[in-house]
Image 1 (tube, helix red, strand yellow):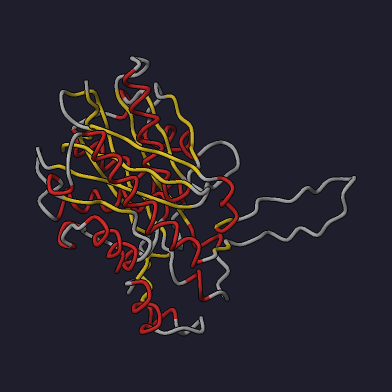
Image 2 (cartoon, helix red, strand yellow):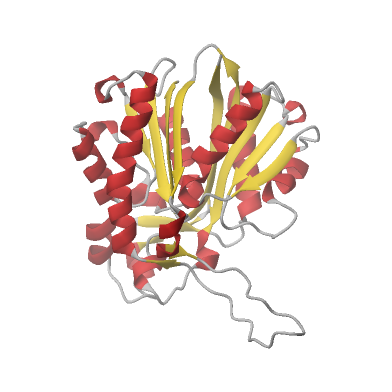
Length: 320
């Protein structure tokens, strides 16, 4: 038995912000950003929310799969930027699309979130507990950024991607996941501090913090390592892969991974230049673009990988 993606969908925040426009508000430049990251534009939410973008991506995935929301049995939403502490974003998606039969909950594995959520849904289906699932990554990262910190605010964007999955004879072949909690504080965003009648403290919400060098070293080491492990588990080689669908964090990371795997860069499609880093949404948005715009066809071999806060990492090998 395998688990196959039958439909994908995505949604990007409507407002597109170029490096030049960002430079009007932040001490930066197009040359500084693009030469270090490969990012030219990003989408920034104005009217959209994490939930609204997740809903749109989910509906597009269902439309591609030719499935009805009322028959969806599981919704797993990966996000670090939910609209509410509770109810979960997944429950809000369930209500919005009319998937009244679905179990719904969120997972937080940061940029690795979609890979983690996909594995959770896969195991639900493999045990026979459900027959299908919607797996979504959605983020409004702009609301947790310090817009005076040019080292982080220029990197991120807002959007959502989704996939509808069912049991099939072909599909996901192997998955690798891992977490390195002892390194977790190199990329963090604190939640509400303890604040009650016994603790006097000013309410001062924190912003995203990132030690860029440490995250970069982690990514260029761990990403090719877990990809190779997933390929070994699948009994495949780098040459067997048609496309590597990587988390869109930095073009230098992508180039380094390609070099370490000794794979041609042409096998590494990107959205990075016009979306920026969308955390849990990066992989499913790229996958959807690959399906809709780059001619991904049944039988193609895909290796997905993501890495991020936690620290977390994961890889998936599948036949489309």
